Image 1 (tube, rainbow, N blue to C red):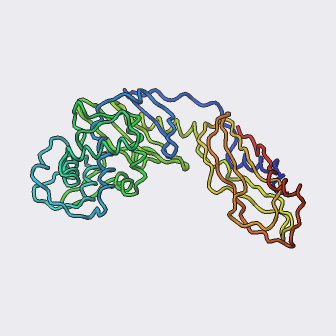
Image 2: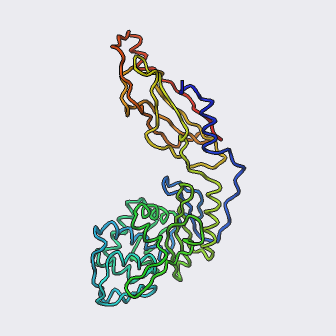
Length: 376
C-alpha cells in the first residue's frame, strides 16, 4: 500500500528538495551601525546587529506613513486640495503647490518615490487633521505590530529626539506594509509622471539586485544613510534594514546573496504521499493529504524530520475533507510547524458493518505514528 512505501517517499523528497549543501559561509561583514535581515512570513531573524537599538530613521519613517494612509483611506482616488502650509516643510519634495489638486494615490507615489516631505505632510493632515494627530495613528499601529523601540512624532522622518525606531522594528513594519498590494505596487515602481513632474524611485536595488521589489531610502544628518528593502527569490521573501550605513547598497546585496545561498524555505511535504487502509468500502484504501503546505525555513545543512499521526485503518464510509491526522516538521529537534491531514476522496460502504467491541476500540484508539523521513 502507498502509506507503507517509505523508501520511495524518501527518494522522492530528496529529489524534490535537493541534496544537503556544504557548510555555510559566515555572514558578510557590513558597515551599518544597526541592521536586521528577516524572513517576512515567519518573522525569523537570519542576521542582526544592534537590532533593538533606538536610532533616528530618516525617511524610512514613510513606510509607516504609507501603511497608515492605506489603512485609513478606502478610496485612494479621492482628490485633495493642497494647503500652503503643507508645501513649506524642509527637505526632499514632490514640489506640491498651494491650491493644487492631487489624489491620495498620487501623494503616495510622491511619498515613496520622491520621498516628498510635502507629500508626507499633506497625507498626514488630510488623513488625521494634523501631523500630531497622524503621528498618534502611527504610534497606535506600531504598538499593534508589537514594536517596542519605536515612537513617531512626524510623518516624514526629519530628526527629532522623540522620533525613533530600531532595525528590528522597521523590519516588522515593512513586513506588514508588503502585505498590502498597493504598497508593493507603488514602492516597486521605477518612475511615474504626475502632472508636469516625473518622479524616479531612489531605490537603486530595484534594478541592481535580483529579486528586490520594494523599499525606502532615507538620509538626515542625524540618522546618516538608512535603507529598508524587500527581496523575493525562489518563493522566499526577505526584508533587510540598515541604519547609519555608508555602504547600504552593497551591504543589502551582500546580505541577500548570503542568505539565499544559506537558507531555504520550502514545502517539506511537497512530495509526501499517504493512504490509510479502508475497511468495508468500495476502495481498499483512501488517500490522505495536507490541508496546506508545510514550509520550513532552515539552513541547507540542517536535518529535517517529518512526524505523522494517522489511523491504522478507517471504516467506510469516508468523506473527503474529513480530518485524518496531522504532520509535524522538526528541524534539528526543534518543532517548526504542524498541519492537518485530511482524506482527499470519498469511500462508500459496500455493506453494513457489524463491529465487535474490540474492533470499535481499535477504530477509536488505533493510530499509527512515525517518522516519514529524515532530510539533512
